Amino acid sequence: MKSIDLLNVVEIFYSIQGEGANFGKPAIFVRLSGCNEHCWFCDTDWSHGTSMTIAEVLKAVQQYPGKMIIWTGGEPTLQLTDTMLEHFNGYFHCIETNGTNQVPSKIDYIACSPKVTPKTLRENFSSVDEFRYPIGVGETPPRIEELPPAVNYFISPIFMGEEKKRFSRSEENMTYCIDFVKQHPAWRLSVQMHKLLNVE
Ligand code: SF4
View 1 (cartoon, rainbow, N blue to C red):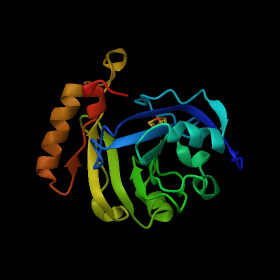
View 2 (cartoon, rainbow, N blue to C red):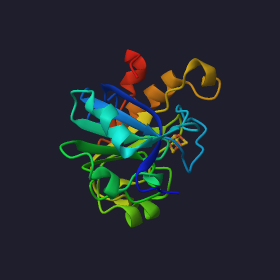
View 3 (cartoon, rainbow, N blue to C red):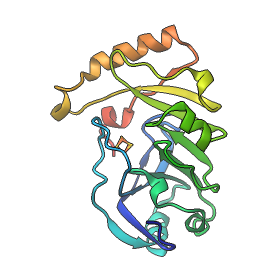
View 4 (tube, rainbow, N blue to C red):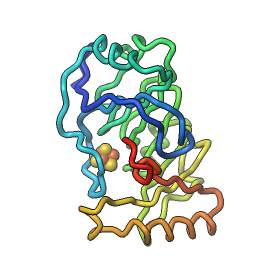
């Protein structure tokens, strides 16, 4: 349930964006708890959180010099509203969403890693800034013509930690995705560089 001035927060930290078109840009990450999907390859523990007021979140954000906030999760659209974003004047707001819901209109940059069909994406978005499809060997993203317009269409090799490597081989996924974009040049490769660089 959305509350007017409370957010359930997993963590707030300052780092660089490790993937997609904003790779390398400093950003304040606000990870919200809860998700409406249960992807087998999920690399985030979004099941816990601390209830914080908007004022507390703003205070935590303001301790960093960066001016870009990445609202992530979990699935941030389950909690985040335009009313909340009004408190964060002067920030550039990015969201990382699974595409199941529309995003608040005050969001400046939409990075969508879809877990829904192209039809649902067309219903929820007139356009996005980037799509990022997690891809393993043998998988393919939808046809671009089926998707809402985007500035960038990425595929992202599923990149597993040691504990899940028996399910999917990161190296094979990478090789497969590189070959895929070479064969389908409208797509770009996005690698989860933060995992290789060992930053948050
Ligand atoms: S949609 Fe994203 S956050 Fe939610 S379970 Fe899937 S990978 Fe994890």
